[in-house]
Amino acid sequence: MSNVVEFRAECPHVKTLSDCREALEPHVMKIVAEAAAWGFTPAEAAMVVADIADDYILMLSRELRS
Image (cartoon, helix red, strand yellow):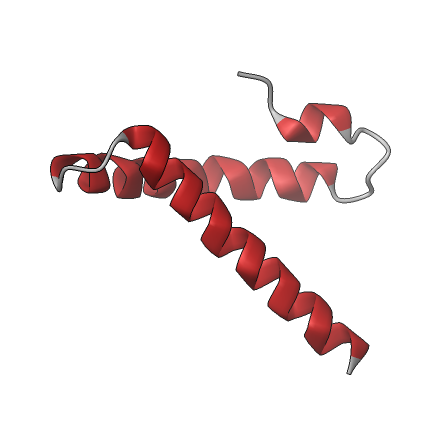
């Protein structure tokens, strides 16, 4: 799977995003594994994690406009 950061080389925060991903990825994978143990498919769990992250990004963007 390609890393999204690879496609954003012009972004000034590439190193920070890469470091953040490295720090958070094991935790996200643990969440997905726990959800799978509860009976959800890994794809369902990953989709929900992405949806939660998307909702959070939208919330942050609304705060920035205020």
